[in-house]
Image (cartoon, rainbow, N blue to C red):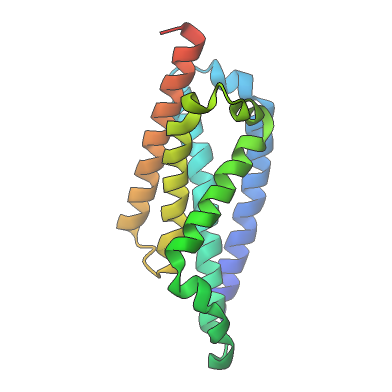
Length: 169
């Protein structure tokens, strides 16, 4: 029960941090875009914090399910046995939601979709892994390193696209 409470508290704290950081990040988007080489680091930190909160939330979910009596665990069949499908749906929802926040609404412009599609695919894959590993009870350091590596690649690609658009390269 202590594990469940600790994970619940960690998840709530991370969600509060993500909310605050997202407000700061989106309100200072132009400063971030002009930060030069720091832009990739800021984007990576932003995405990594969100992935950490998702991983903590999914770990909390699995801990709650494990703490339930056996008769209530049967309701976990869909998510537990179909972790890949659930993770894909969740990642799609998160990435679509991020497109709607702040300046991301411009990414919904049909002319810009091919430009941002690689970033969306990379970030969706990162969110998929961040959701999948805890649901499969495999949220080990080596697997989480893979998640953060995917987000590092995504931040570098996103920075390259922004620089290409701004400087016309």
